[in-house]
Length: 456
Image 1 (cartoon, helix red, strand yellow):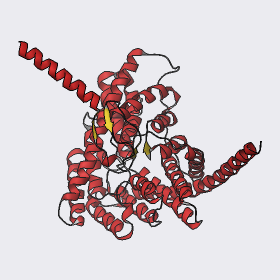
Image 2 (tube, one colour):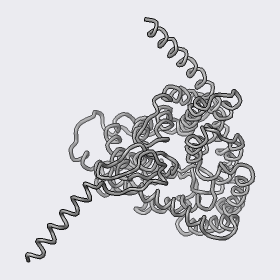
Image 3 (cartoon, one colour):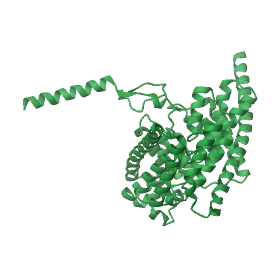
Image 4 (cartoon, one colour):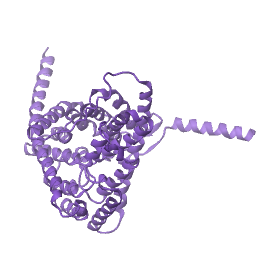
């Protein structure tokens, strides 16, 4: 009896502690990220005051962004979420508080000038920075600081996209591939809801696409088969995205010239490509996403089959040249437009459905977060898409392999029993080979073929 009372009392105080802490930190992050979103919105509105096209400022903005980050907060480099994951795994969640103003300013500059980056990475990094600062201020134990920083990721993500449940799951799913951190689930949910509610109270409005694909959840074998094909396709698209962004960063980094010259040259190249292909590939691209997800507009007819490939190129160049911002918003764009392209081929009557499936499935595969992505589909598009989104998201997650847009993710599962993969390594360091028994099977098959060939 005494043991039972002790257990229940300890759990009660632990739950009470984290309900209080995560509520406070969620409100703080909701307010801070709301400030970032409003500054970003004002900056985009301010483009109209320029006497020339805003993207002509991109080479200069990238140079200034690189200088800001190098001078004041090197950990603010890149797309944000990656740095937070790395800090949790390698530094017990310690994040320099200078990241918050530097990341805000650098991202606003980048997006204002037309860099193809997103706003969720900075949101997650700002949220994690606030959580880390509070943890340090209150002298939390390192384990509690890590939990609170995970809450920061969830709250930042929920504030940016208006998806509190998906945001909470994303925070606990994105750190380790194949593991959900259940001990952080409650505080992440509360922080996400608190941040989301705070943002709404402060005037942030979110866009939802209640597409109402079906009035009832019915079994459609042919549509399910097409969704399976879509999952395979989105997995390969995700592989292209990860490879292109990774190789672009590595290649640009290997060029032995001054960093500022590279930033200016990269910005100039993006400007040139914009003059050739148009403005729809720069910036956040939210209007294009809205077009392909709106079943009642003819605007999506202007979406080309190669739109998702060009967006991948623009995003890779923007990040490699020193642009500061997230990568998930461009991935939403890439996923939605690739789904629109596939839907136009295999199921024109469900083209918007496939755009929505691409929206979440490419995120699932590139970030290894199939559960968060499925829940996001429900939050953004309605319950009718749930079973199709789950199928496409999980298939694309598996097909993309043991890779990630976040190279600091730790691997805790194999995506195929045929592969030998070292568990517990960061994605960027893993080596993959066939299991010995699979290699033996191949060798036996090869010998049989040789024998048959000799008999002939």
